[in-house]
Image (tube, rainbow, N blue to C red; front, side, top):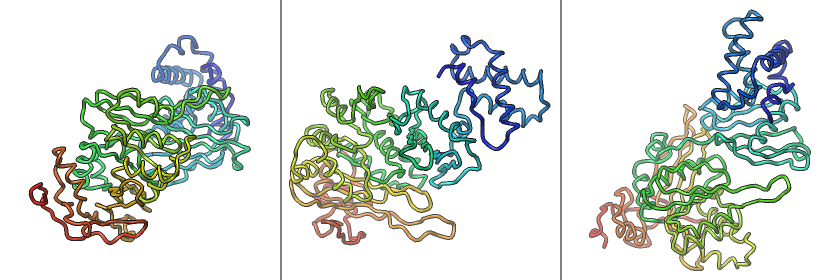
Length: 465
């Protein structure tokens, strides 16, 4: 949409206040009369906004109306937001405490703050205004939304992920969901938030540096991408890393990173590049490690093959509610490839490829924690066996509305400890090493003995060799 079209667009602003809506429309027209569109188009976004605010301030001072400083600032903000930004959503996008914005038709705007949902006292004045805002969003990424294309996934230039679904698929009006670009947290920052503890950081750091293949599992909104980004920070600098995502969110700090992003089809339905295409291509790019933002289809089989054929230390996320579910989900996704592979062969691939599953959970108080670190101890076409080496034992919600609990540890399988030792990684004392299978918190299927079994806490090779 051109600058002139954005400024002269007749859409009203946040509903119910006819006089204010009228003022916004009037001053949008006056603003257009005062500015040089060619000059404005050449400015960067921040400079363009500052220039419009300055010009509009002069207009209001010259022609009225008489407003308090607060009313004046609000009017200027609303006119410029409607002209260049996303109207009533613009302040929400600037609020760092908001992680997700959910617009359920013109009448309801919800946000997520610190893991909790709340409805805001704002609304779009009409379905048409909401649709104009949606069209403005998708046009910035050369997409369109209409009855023939009623669903859109996109990423804003500033990084936010956007999902749109409109009637006739949505019966409650246009639905807009904006997920904020997650800030890159370090593991130490996540410790401060209570998502894990120092013992777990030591273990995860050793596993990543020793090139264990790690799957981060969790439901929607549990922080999988945030943890994946933090774990990637443990990869030694100098390795060639290829990241593959639907919408690029990872923010790796290493010097040798190749970032690949899938591409949806164009308006003619052509030009689509899938995660699977990128995974296959990445194998020809001589990667030391491959990081897949999320596996959700046939690319899972290619990822598993890459993990088991020389690309150790790779990372990926998957939607699942437990470590066992993650393995079954990987098996199901692997079978979605157009290559006809028997389930037992996919199980062989998973047992060969996946070393560690890190399970994330979002609790009722909105907190996100690592609730399990599990080692895949099965081989070949055996039934899946999982060794839980850490879990979060939660207690009922306290009077302060928070979920409290403790992280509990179990001994590492001997082969895991040997691999850490051979890569010069310390054995975390809180875990120790199992001297026998009976000491393992081993799960076969869905049964598991309790954690807290006696462990050998001496972290040296000679103590258990």
